[in-house]
Length: 220
Image (cartoon, rainbow, N blue to C red; front, side, top):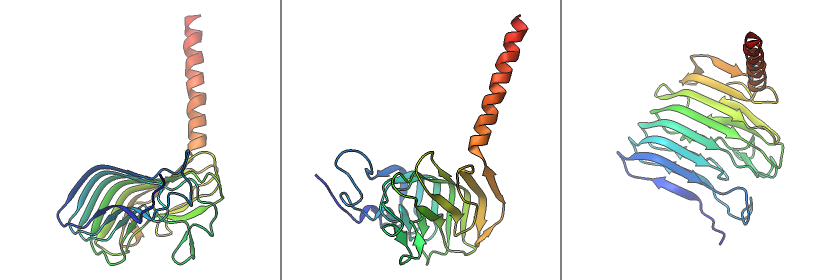
């Protein structure tokens, strides 16, 4: 039976600990589809002083996670955006002015939030959709993001244009993995690293072949 909902998991209580959540909407397989099992958000946190560890939120139609409470703490976040968005027109945020939805959204009124170890990735299976930013957070002293990255999986179109708040590099054909080490008060304070994964994998493969051949030659 097909089901619809706006919010799958909602935390309203203060001083709550959330541990090892996998909040997942089916976005491929039999009996599911963009207009079939419709949703909005996977996780919404309204309580203050909520601590979350190992959160996985995936495939929802809008923001995967919205964090509205103050003094929030997050350690490890993994999120895949929905596979099957049919077009940019059908999947845009900010009243249609930004393509796609960020995965991790800290509410505009939040003044204190700390999150570390966040990964957002995409595999746009049916359309050339570019997501504006993997994360959106208020640009204030009390909001700190550490070690966040975006990634595009092989295949499909589009990608993610920025890591946080239109800052940080874009994923693309040869640049699939982009990370920011520290983001505070709207500023990238610890640089941006870009890893060209296809070239890196190719280089490692060549090095492995060379080492194997050298080892074989020693036996002769």
